[in-house]
View 1 (cartoon, rainbow, N blue to C red):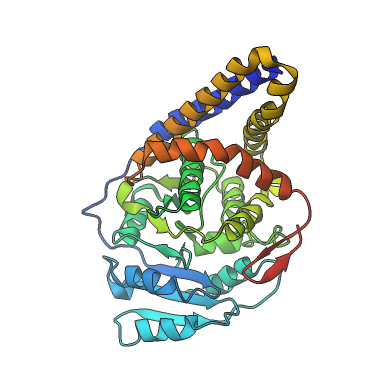
View 2: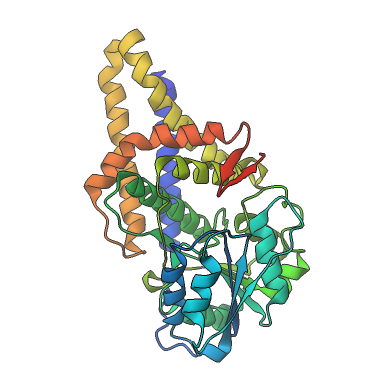
Length: 375
């Protein structure tokens, strides 16, 4: 058991170190004097987001970008609340080109159908997506425009951070997002991108149509970002980039309630086995095994191997130190406020919650926003 722990801890630490070094290789981009050269179609799929839409819409109205060089396509995924009324009240008489669209349902993934409908109706070549529970920075489109003008990409992935909150499970979501962003940036640094986030995402409309959009993974309810990124990477090698800049970070609202948080994470994790590439699967497997070893050790060492309890506790401490370093170091490029004490505390429960989510996602379906989905 101890030998297995040493092996897993070494591999786990190496994974974090590898991604942190990759993060350093991704150059931070500053674009304060960029020209407004590119035209964008912003696509936002929403369902029952009356509480979140006002914040998103206001941030979009505050964008530092000529209003005639972008449009806003809000795709209503069968909302039953006042989302449509809020949009109309907020955007009417504003100097912005917008419309509410009803998506065409053609697959098992309402989100992908909504995005596809938006892309098909977009009048500009560059598609930008975010989520209804987000707030975008004022230089959001400026950053994308500068990246498009300088490196001629076909896809750009950006940073996402969970907003500040004193709620413990919101802190958990912040910690988890920092870890995911660290892995995302690190893999891009080594030119082997594994993850991305649809809350801060841009791609060429023509390229999207060329790879047939989400065709081939429509059976999975989630994955409108990662699966598409993988298709772009396969078809357009070298034209998928990461935009790393503290002022280009999209802020997302933490999910309220422990049950809702678990449901969202299970939804995300359910797509893992369908993702292409051994790298992401081996990375996820070793992280899961490290967490499971710690959980099993809580019973095994006190009952069957007491002479190694101190070594077991030392393994816990070393992992917490690495997690703290990885999360807080990743936060530096996002420029959020983060408490090392909170990161340390969240790290204590992370193995239990993340292991449950990983195992639970392998069996059965899940429920999200009033809908049941099969795995």
